[in-house]
Image (cartoon, rainbow, N blue to C red; front, top):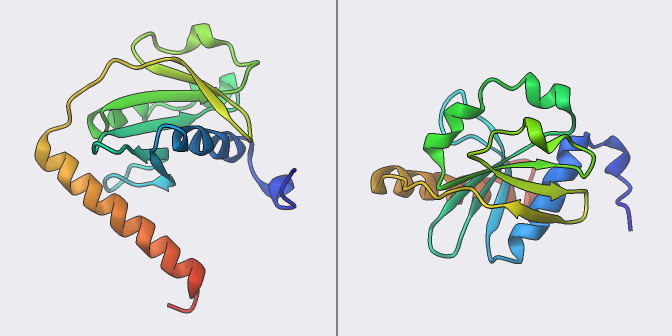
Length: 147
């Protein structure tokens, strides 16, 4: 069933929802529009049960992908990096050394797993703390927008 708000969401936001639903099946929790560091904003950051951090960038078109020059800077902020695209996206233009998810507004599927990187322990610790604080802040805002 479509949400009444879906008509107001951008295509990339709908892909992100499907990605977050899929990641939950791996016991990952996700935050959309997460900023791991000043000047960076990833579409989806996911935290796994063993502390692993995945970054997923959602691209709704070839032009959307080709206009994104910032993505290489996200690699140092995750253990795995993925592109989430719809089934009509030309996969051959995506870099070979990244993961790929095919997604829609309701689900996703990993079709290529990214090779794991190892985040330094201090960065992982800082990211997990920031993830937790951002998630708690968003929940607090939902419960009490006046805060």
